[in-house]
Image (cartoon, rainbow, N blue to C red; front, side, top):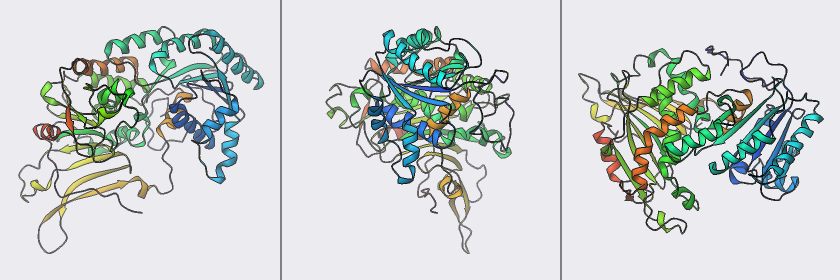
Length: 514
């Protein structure tokens, strides 16, 4: 988004040849860019971070003559060892061979501890040598630290970065850090983590990444809502019956049971990913597209959410979850949850926002489903066929479609449910939709915090869910068993019905073929 905050319906794309100076338009020309991936030998770095950096490099957003990438972790490796580990996660096509080789040569590896100065002093020395080789003026270079690490080590790593790896002066350069979720396990731990990092870095330097905010159709939400006139009068409690935000996986924890059991589905998916989507669905129009204006409106939504009612929560745990030897036999950790949130404001009073997430279910999808109220005075007697719905399919098969009632072709006046469909694969043939991590790393380089979580936003999110999470942790709220490959506990469907959701029977959306 343009840092000026102006709304451009046709916006010039960010040029791969532009300098990334961030939000400050009056800074001197910046020097070279160093991207430091901490936890470089871990799964997140290999599967997500480095492939995203490669795609940015291949598209020209990371230039050979100005960028260098550093991997840092405790594992003893050579530069080539790390490159070989990464190579398997990069494109294998023959035509990509030269690009992959050139990219891997940008990577240098430094080994060291996360809580001792020596490794970080060695890292700073390596970064400085790169900056000198590119003739960067001291203090003009840019350093981006990506923490692909467990949150438990964030404070000590940030302290080491602050003490030993910062730019020495401010001549247009910057130091920024990217931290991954989970940001704590409840309100108290999140606030403690925020305070520890906040003592070391200013808020504009901290990028709390939630990769859902980098998804193409999530980023489309603001445009859909505020650039299309026909949505404006409909998007309120007078017309909308309920909103569902759904995340479903058709597989279980698959070897991650011990890790997942520390968090559960609410901490892992609902409190961050789905709640962020809710904010974009429910927020008021921001004053401009400036990141702070957008994040201000998201915080207002979170602060308007009323306490969750017990009768509007269903938890589940799929049968076989505790067969994983790393999961305790008495685990109450939910692998499924349906939670209804209610927003106490003029636009949304009385409209249930249904957040639903689960593992080992009968399908894999993530979507937003806005269900409209019944047509008053239904002269066609077609209400049983289903209500109008606007559905945004986030993954897989990205699409948006409007379910509506039409006349069934033929001589008789009968009705049928159909759709107006915008399927991305069909409409935008040949267009590669960027991965979320590519987009968000590029935003970090540009200094655009719109799609990152601000500290007060994080606090407001934890305030909503912490009371419920503590009761689950203490065993006061039980998870119901459900069969793998099912829809989840039957009680969840009953809760949706009580909330006013009307399921459409006999209609299935089928992604169009090319």
